[in-house]
Amino acid sequence: MSERIAEISRKTSETDIKLTIDLDGAGNAEIDTGIGFFDHMLNSFARHGFFNLNVKAIGDIIVDSHHTIEDTGIVLGQAIAKAVGDKQGIERFGSFLLPMDDALVLCAVDLSGRPYLYYDMTLTTEKVGYMDTEMVKEFFYAVSYSAGMNIHLKQISGENNHHIIEAAFKAFAKSLDIATRYNDRLEGNVLSTKGSL
Image (cartoon, rainbow, N blue to C red; front, side, top):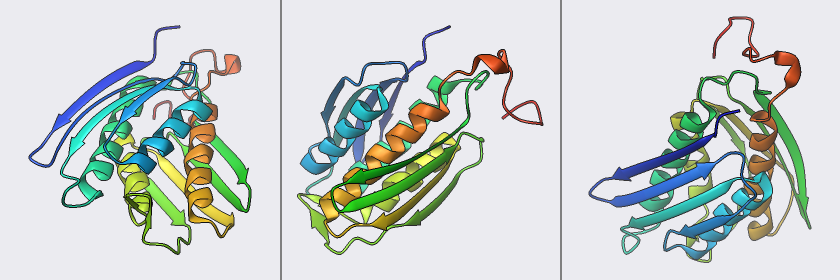
């Protein structure tokens, strides 16, 4: 089995991002985006998906958190797509219902090659720490489109915005971990009637 590691760099007039992901890691992370709560979410994503993840993002956070978070989502999606490769032998689909105290969030993913985000979450504060809560949707949208994957996120319950957002990131991590696992019964084939994804 070849290593499923990808390194992506992206530099614009607004952000400079370097990201490395290992889909078969141990959940180790080194994250520095300049946005503390976002760092916490990416750390949670890495830990609970058993992905080794390094992210160094320099962005115009003096403006707001938008460009840094969205562009990190773009780069993460690109890295996931590159690391997954031709998708031969993997489960392709993954879903997880994750509880976190008052919050319960469902995530389902399909590594179909087709981007789509379904987002049904109700956040009631403008910020958690220095992260704008409206950027949760923008982040997952960026990941879905740059990775070419379906992501469905649905909040079942929850009142605490920190818990709801963290449950979403952890549920996404668990779902992606399941979707990228190898299934011996596929014998190296792609799980699709079309023969490719």
